[in-house]
Length: 138
Image (tube, rainbow, N blue to C red; front, top):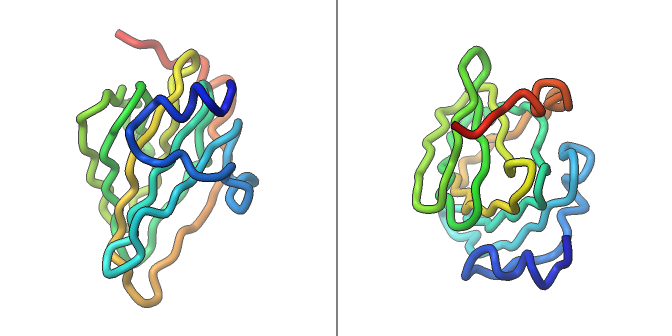
């Protein structure tokens, strides 16, 4: 997908290609730091079909505020949830999960995390193509 088209997914800055975290994503994503004082706020934009690996936030939770396009969110052991612009997802610490775009549409969310000393992300296995391709928009 062209960068110019991705810049229109939300009103927030697209940022740069997310190369530092690319090993933990299937597909291409973009990352823009919006705030790093007390609460880390990032705009994360996913190309169609892009998703991150299963992961766990240790020591601090995460809040996703959906700001453009449609995406998926799934916790381990639960069904995937379709996300639309305007929805908010709270992810408690220690919850294994993943999130990303639907297969045919770009998706953007703000990612908010309280900056807690010692907090970390544990990156796990990728979401397989087989599992991802089974997801259907109802």
